[in-house]
Length: 520
Image 1 (spheres, one colour):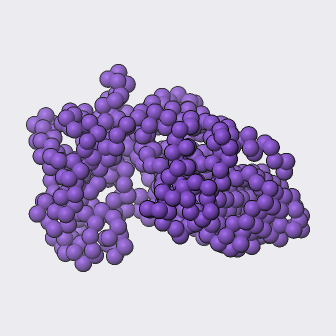
Image 2 (cartoon, rainbow, N blue to C red; image 1 turned 45 degrees about the vertical axis):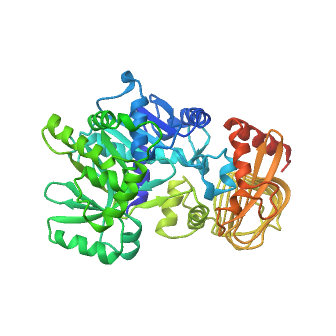
Image 3 (tube, one colour; image 1 turned 45 degrees about the horizontal axis):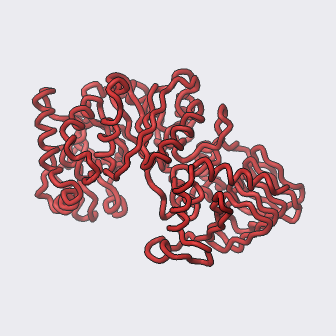
């Protein structure tokens, strides 16, 4: 695996003119749209083009459409003069309030993808958010598309970053006659991947995707694949995201124009892609998925069939889908409590994934005599601080204890974290972790104790600060979300409503104001 080489190559690609001159950001409300327009503009020299010569267009999807119809709706919203016909562009989808990320998401104005990371932009000086990382680490994808002669938009989910397990050479693929491109991992099925991922069958002779197979049991998947045994075909896991040619986007938008009204939803996967590839809906796994897809978007099969027929008439050939193989990819998802904690834990470890994550977040690789990785931080001599990653932080008290912890953008007099955990962007005089897996985020306090697996954040409203707690292992469905739990003054649902009523910048300003009042 070459994750670190891929990371360094990707970040080098923003130098000069970068890979594209257009980034479209699609979110779910006018307030979100304004927030992301401002944020993306502020960090674009760190994420996409060092010279800043890139247009940022922020669009709003006022009604949920699913990521396929959402893609077409966003393309339809672009004024004709701003729709490119050559080169590559980026379309980043930053939806998701992050209900399962409570209370961190409420503290961010119900924007899961706005979670700040340990990586600070070299030119902007700002901590890059999850959505920014998704854009930054798309540059190598864009390079592959551009060097292969592809003219279209990379449609990417803004709440995750995926690092390929290989460094791609430029010009290795010819995408000049391809309409859709998928990102895959060529591998053999196992029980987990069969159950949780869609699969593509790839024709090695043409370099095209032959068909999509919906997720199912390993036994039935293997039965489906028996007809493709032999050296001509390979199987690959679908990694999500898609690149669509401008010509495809134009034709598809016209074909689906009658359903872009917010009353229907359709995702790229599994069924829209299945139908675009001419899949046989008599297959058992496909029948169930198609039934669900047709309920969400009545007429989906008929409309896709019409689009494919029109494509054949106008282009003179069937639609073609290519692929880019990521190998064993490194998936970085900061939008769930469990995946955030695992990412932070891995950051401290001497493993290939730990080294790659430190490169991903721009942390130095060298450890001090106590095994700590320190970046722009101050810790007291004699304190029991070992095997930890500490970035842009200050710890004062020699009685502090931190073992395998992560501290980013925080200030503490005394912190006791003997079994790991994380303090993120917090200023707390005396902070104690009573067990492992705890995380405190954007909290200003004199004294605080975090239980095992606990979560703590503060919602900084204009009317005052509201502390909120949760646990990594709790469900956020039903009463746990709609009613106050764990001693919280309000429910997570109510916290989300109050956060949504504020302009995104006000939550940030109130937090910074609170931060400035504590003298550590």
